[in-house]
Amino acid sequence: MERGGLVYIITNKLNTVLYTGVTSDILSRILQHKNKEYSLGFTAKFNCDKLVYYCFYPTIEDAIAEEKRIKGASRLSKIKLIKSLNPEWKDLFDEINI
Image (tube, rainbow, N blue to C red; front, side, top):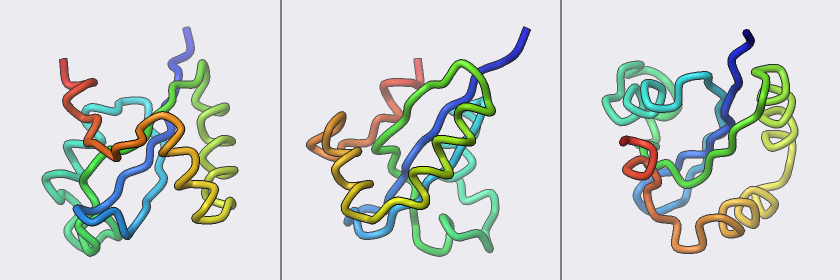
């Protein structure tokens, strides 16, 4: 049985920096960002720890393909994507941390 994957976008407190990632374990991955486990990484450097978008895909390959598409898109496209599901830019981590 193949595990699915999730594409996610996190930002900083002021919503000025966007980071797009992919994972098969969203809870653990977002906790890594929030705890700055990779202190020299992009998200730690720019204080990105607010989950503002995520979407599940049936396979990790589908998720990786979508991550690449989103990363290649303009900032405006990413903002429109976030606003389409999360117009208030609230941290969605508590919704998945059940």
